[in-house]
Length: 349
Image 1 (cartoon, rainbow, N blue to C red):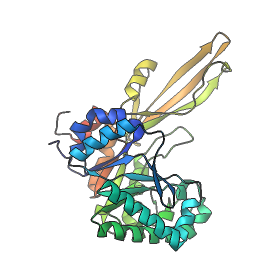
Image 2: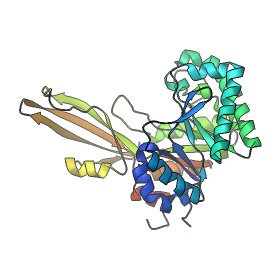
Image 3: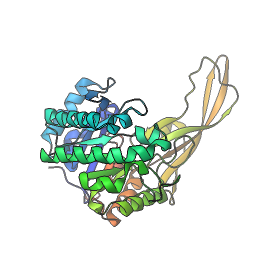
Image 4: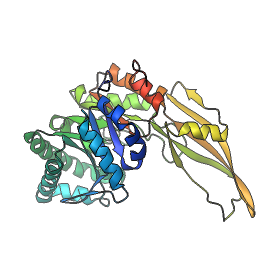
């Protein structure tokens, strides 16, 4: 059987990485504790649907491999409702119960080991002025759902952004999720300790930020074994400046994504020279991209920040040092053999 790392490894599996994931599924899935197919959306009180962009054949191939492996299949369910709608569902005991029943039925129908909730609209769409009202409703929902899933022999995981301190201030992180209050009712809390820089160029998950997220979780959750640290195997490629006026007949890209699997090709094509920052635990490089046609040209100056195998190791070390209950890879299909060499350092890849 595939070897296990020295700390439990989970992974989210987005539908857009399935081509890469299916290539290595037989070799890799057995090294994982929980794998979370990432193509289910909560689109109503009692509606859990497959993302319309997901490829049905690729899903079937992956699920066959997952069901044949020793990994637990714990699908992620994303809040795909417009801003405020999930908060409204949880605020009403009747619709909250109906939603719990829909989730329990979903787990039963698929015979899944459990479910993972990725309800991010509270944090990123609803507005901070809603958090005080949403927070107790979320806790009541998690308590009810956790009880029903556990009674059925299934697990409940939540994937939530980090809590940075207990002050509930502007820099306290995402206290709407009440990490401490939900902890007794869940099996794992996956901390999404990344996306530090989104709009502006910068590190994806600088080590100081990750450490603060770990400390924030430990300050709220009594049992560190319930905390799972998210590991980013990706990066972003930003435009920092445009020289000249880009031709109207040329496609001009803005911010794009890279990952550990694709970034080496970009480096080679652009002749870039990456540098590693010991403080952030990430790599970065700059390059120029000339866009031209018969009608003219412009030059984009671009900056890339990303986490690869070295960064994965450093973040796993933080999880080990704090005796957390595991790590979770965002995402399966982003990683390459160098990442796996750090996940399983004593095993040849």
